[in-house]
Length: 215
Image (cartoon, rainbow, N blue to C red; front, side, top):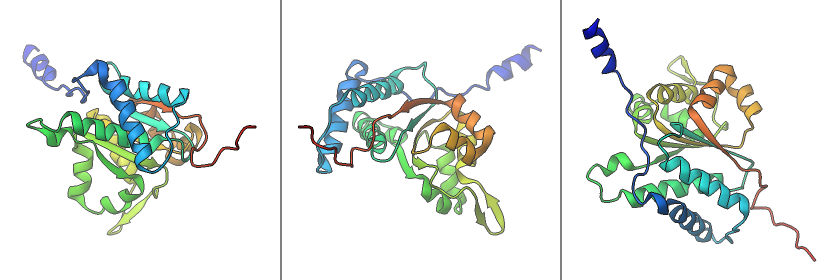
């Protein structure tokens, strides 16, 4: 029994990556990266309450060891979800640029729609399942099923299952609501999302649509 318990104790999941550098400064750093990303696109950065609140939530998720292994950023088109994901990616790459194992501290980012091609390459798809840090932009737009040499795969579902089992650091964005995610992926994957993901919900409408000027 003692040997059994010893071996059982060896089956532990490595805690997901979290930022441990400059922790108190992360909110300010992420704010500056986000602002810069907006301005680099020739847009005006709108420093509203929702943006500040969502940046604070993302900063907490990046640094707090008690948060879940994954993050789901939800909201309509054009309200800053992908910009937040990109900003997190840049922040991590800057902070860990000089690390000896910096290749492990790169938040790899893919478009969900690209999974239809990636799933056809076993090595690439396995890499996505196993990499330490992964961001998936726009889940919900990808094909639900892909046929490869006569076999049918559900790329996003398989990827989520693999990363859920390993408790891997995963950031996802989607334009779908919780009900729409349920309708697209079914109860089992929706349950996985709920268990593995903290959420940031953007309620602001699209910043790409010019707002009417007030008189």
